[in-house]
Length: 237
Length: 336
Image (cartoon, rainbow over all chains, first blue to last red; front, side, top):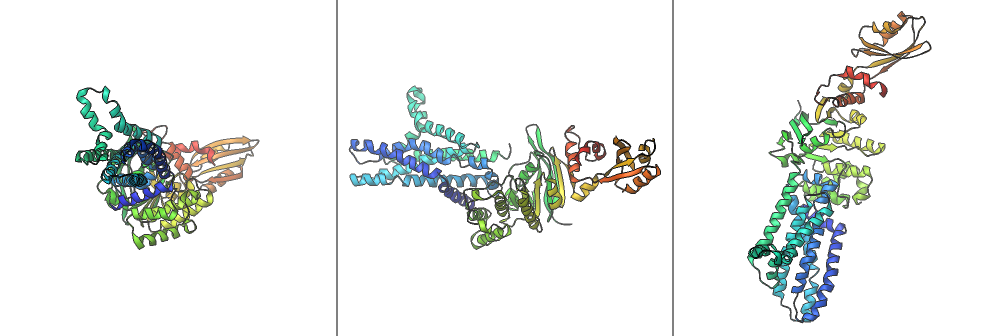
């Protein structure tokens, strides 16, 4: 556990020693600003549901950018060898990295808090759905980061890790919804159930359904397990 | 008998059909500085990666400080300070930050951690660079940081993969002295393909070729393993061939004519043992009425031994003999 926290804290500081954290946070905020505020005044009611629905797809790019280097870069530069040959378990390495990435995600989400605050000044904002919305988007981002780490631990190339995880995240976040019309009716419920959208929507309305929470946690757990296996497999290859 | 720190038994690593390491068995005791010597791709790094538990052997096992690499991999790793090849470091960190991170990973905390960081910085003379970012350091200083991180938890065993490669001669000497200092109270394994380094630094050499350990001895014993050879030039006074005069000497195996210029002829004399034959050669020359113009002894050095042992493997990969020195001498003429 101690090792996990040590790795997490080094990685978290590492984010801010390099450009990744600043770029990701700035780009997300720069895109989110206009697409949130432009339609906001046309809608005519004080809600930040729109913000969450935009954040989802943005995170499909941001989370892979945050996680692409976590293992791949260590592999490429050889520092993975130093890290793994210390008395530390593979699972602690993966978990430490994941915690650091969750930390960066939290920083990103905190940077969006001025939006609901501004909205609450303009109108009568119901904070309940805002909080559950943040919970939902954090869970969704967490799942995306876990997918990103899994992709990162299979390759030495950050670019490959990025594109693989963007593809998976976009598919889960959007495409499942888009392709719904082309899918046989008998499968729609199943396919829909796999989509991020489907699970995050309830929470942005203020409903916490344990099924949604379990869905995101399972995706995260599965992806982290995959990352762990990939890291472990280097011993046998 | 001193305590055995590393006990490798039949370590084999296969990548598909290729054997990167083939049945390596050796013991290394406390306080030894052992050099792994071999051409690139011979299996030096593979052995080190197995001992440090970065990869698992396909067959065989090893005990590091009494901990089995399969059953107690964390224990084995805790006993080792490791510097991988090409010194990977988190280059965006400060030296101080980095050493603290490694110290924490090694289970050091609080005042103990700070004391250790201070100590290794002293040992590796990193004082001036303590607050520098690692990527701004020269290769020699990066190597010091690499050594410092390997030393931070006072490991009984140090494994250094090519610690001297890529350094300029001055840096190499500094790092080598540092390693010798460190090795006074620790078991050190280092790999290199730089032969003089081994002779100067190590008490024992394991020569690895094509995944096999082909020699395991002290540098001195290895160099005495091969026989010396002599080259001489005589001036002939009559028409007789002087060759017979030398081949009759007791203990001479082969005499070969290297060339003749006017009445000066050069020979190479290969003795069968390592006895000093200079006197006999002189007597033989005088006895045959020859004027001895030049006589040189060519000592076998680690380099030729190394080449014999590692090249011998190439034409016939199944041969595992390391005693075919005599046959190989013929190929080594050019290297003096």
